[in-house]
Image: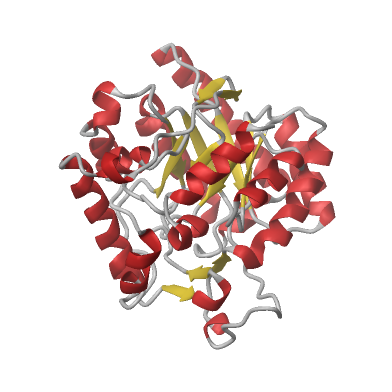
Length: 345
């Protein structure tokens, strides 16, 4: 059924239909219709970062930037949902058009630029959700945080601290996004002493907030796939030294594989996601897991478009798997297929 509707949806502008589809999904949920069309969530609990996840399949950040559709997305069968990226202040993001479908490649290029309504709006949406009011055990919620475009790179930590302060008691875990290719200079935060200083400040804040709320919320770091072996080794060393709780591998890529069929759209700037990034993200995943020596759990994301893809990520050493572009192209059936496949291991 989803593939039938997808043909219609894909006739329209990618960003406009993205917003409309989420609104329709939430409307159907409020009417009680969504449960009639969705398969029952696969229950295969696993504990990662001290959190019990209902199953290993999650939604990557970027789809629900303002946390306005948590209840509907949870109904789709995800074991966890990551909302955001959210910044302290609302911002429009980059100029439109900024979202492109490479349909022959089942891929997407986006240069959204952290468009969101700000952290106060996100928290208000979470508090207004059924998940927050009565179903917090139904689905794990991650909140992905970033910096505003106008904030100088040397002051970026202040933006992350503000977001942590406001989201801490509403999140099951928080993701530090330092790897989006669409905010100028952001990826520089992944490297050297700057990374250590950033993570140290955030871990200190975590300790302060844990004492304040009597609740420990794990911190994960999301890294890019466009890293050298030496860079991966250095990042792993710094993640271990600062005792970060988890790492997400990986964000979208700036690279453009020669195998892309949609060469005209491939010239658009922005992050590429979907099957073309699968092998690249796997290389970084395997390198990082080797360097972490089992000390930090890894959430794998990048190009998962089938149950076998998800299984490959887990067999490579990941603890959890996130999907995004595969969900856009395949719909909710991909969630249950992946969760069932991972239930077998």
